[in-house]
Image (cartoon, one colour):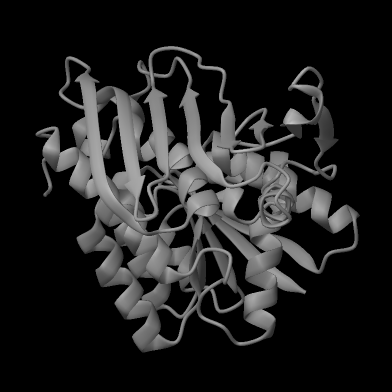
Length: 329
């Protein structure tokens, strides 16, 4: 039984709580052990509502609890580095919500600390852990769409009014919150041999990015055309075009179906392949952490430290080219 704690008590923390309850019902060896907030009453209300044993009114107090084994960090991007550091310094394994940190320098610092201390730390970019990733790769490997040439992906929700999105002090903007998904989708499908990065953005009045358009060119000539926006809902589609067909993913943020179109019938009819049923989709990243802890690993193969660093450096490159730096940088 692994005692799992949640640092932060917002909406995404509640999604993780639902996930853990579902995992427990399915027989996974997880204990909904503790939750911490900067407000004890809020933490206690969360614990009562979500079925956690303990509530703490400070993050420091929770990580000092020797029974805590794995901490899920559910705070804004701007606070991730400090909270990962706090956990690692107290020997607690960490599953940190995306974007992993606000920038690559922060990511490098806390990952080096984790490696020095021998503590598991991994990024909770849930699409990296989902079965859909292997399903997509299997289609490509067996040549179902011929040779992949082009990829498109987008993600957008009308969330620009939320503090964590609009405020530079919270590492806001579309890129870290939404654009990270199309970027990860492209890397999972096409690999990491990016030779050219181009991007443009429009900005909110606060100075953070509102709409992002990004083109990645890979060493073999493949291209990925990616978009993200925090002011409108987009169709969330991901499409991988090949010389003999294409794959359409219905939602790159949480795929439910993958549809294959081929030139065998002149693309008239697609064959739909559903992904396995899930609790919320977060369970796969938790399972990966449990497996890593069981086997004494300090990173998860689904999202190794070098991939987290690669993604943070790419997002830094884009932000800086757009003239966006956070106040704490």
